[in-house]
Length: 115
Length: 113
Image 1 (tube, rainbow over the protein chains, first blue to last red):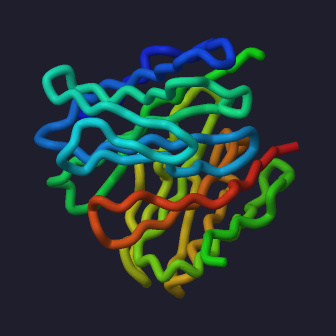
Image 2: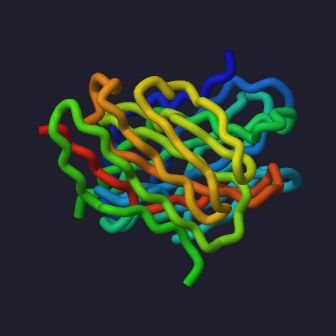
């Protein structure tokens, strides 16, 4: 079965330190990979995606993610965390062969940045 | 501004009542989706529509109904058959390209009282 795992329910980071939010997936073939962010009581905002090419993808608000095909991972990173980065982060995957273009979602990781 | 508008933001319903959540988009997207979000869980797909006058059940369609009479609109009705309707509901739309990301509305929080 296709799935996305975000192994950490919560990640705590001090402001100014680098952050990593982990995502691994189990999808047949080469997937499209996405990261979204959600602030309390708001909809999801798109951060970045991997389609093809360079394994390091840069996105909004200084975030980046590294696609690792051998480890089937797509970890979200930021060199220096801000308190305003505190939010809920979702990883999602789409199978390129799925004609319905359905997204498979991780359960989300709560990121807390402490001043 | 282009985007997706969900209304209302907060909704209270008495047990046994049907309630309809609105979702309107002006992005000219063919595909639209309804998700349910519960604490500690990822998004679960309720219904989706790839084109006007057509829609498909998602993973948790029981107790919900939708219509897609116009490209811009994809309302979701939470019926009395839905046993645990209290949740945060998210509507999304997407361009036709498979590589395209989805765009989300701001959500509707439904509470059964």
